[in-house]
Length: 263
Image (cartoon, rainbow, N blue to C red; front, top):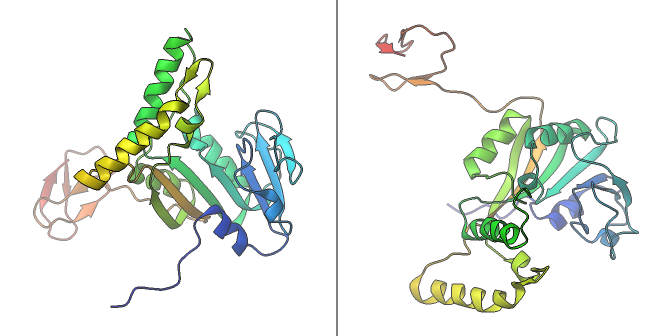
């Protein structure tokens, strides 16, 4: 059987290039900008962050709004695409942010998500250095940068419960970009990036131990009218029939084989 040749868009640049001229795009939690705004003159781009306007080549190529992501200053159905590029792991209440993204998206609008895999070496190392940095700087009450831990199944459940449907995804290898640029207040860890990544490459080459693998989740989702996640609470011990039981009775009768099962 031949593999399908046509691939669904996934990367930010692919998704942006697929949009019709005049489409509206929200870069939420933009930082310095999630992409080169100047390359997409035909799109109407709005960037939002709770800090000041992004600095650099992106700053003059979009409308910037200073706002948190829990209550966006836009009407419902304002955007064709919302981009949350490594944002959800940093927030306290991700469901509120997702529902707000759902609100400002048009019907069948697109949501781009990138977030770390909590099981990966890169995310564990990032969390460790975050703890050590706070200790080194005597910032014992300072909250950690990554407040959420995500698995693939957990993300799917999260999105499907809140009105989104997965169109495409990938498991992205580690880049350790943050380590290359890490020179904060005396902690010049950037000098360790080269030797560290060199060691990881040798482990991969000679011992087949790939510690770069599956470090981040990239997802493209579509806003839909239905909730696509289903709860299953019980399985029949005799025939394997699955069911979701809401009542608190001690037993339930299998609709398929009539077997009596304990709750």
